Length: 114
Length: 115
Image 1 (cartoon, chains in turn brown, green):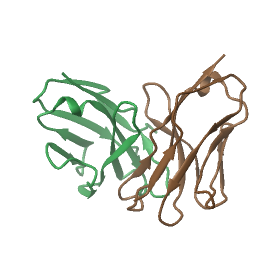
Image 2: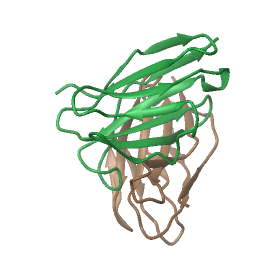
Image 3: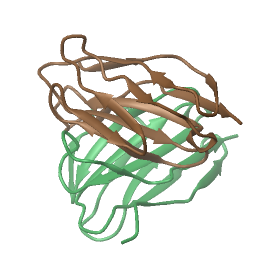
Image 4: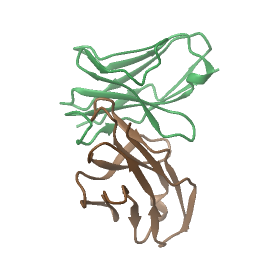
């Protein structure tokens, strides 16, 4: 079935540093890919998505490019802020094409220090 | 437009009691998903419902767990005879269509603690 592997955390960076959070996937076909963010005590919010190969999703300075050659969807940001501290989840539809919801990675806890 | 509303936010139950978790989807959304998040883990799919129908419950334990989404009112996730291992955060998500391509909107979750 579909699966996601993302880098383990926590990832600790200084403010204004460059961020990369790696995500690779295994899937049948070319499903949409998502990044969700979870702030402390909150639910998940969609950060960005890409629906087909070579698409780039972007939002709030974050970017991720759907690369089918490497089956990757790495999250990047050029200059992180303290307010970016959160847990980030890479996700794709389950093997049932959405009937079985989304399959999430384990999450990467990002800590940004001032 | 209110977001996905879950209640209660926190729920404490003794072993053997029943837990009822409620989810009101966003207005106009007829697709509801329930997920469970264990500490240090990602979310795991439990069940997908549309109004009055269970579409996929492949992620839900066969015993003690049930879910419904009646014609009127919120979706309910029910856990009977809770055990310590049921302690987790339970999230509900709703979408106007299935979750394959469209954004899912998540509630703030119910954190269940079994003592």
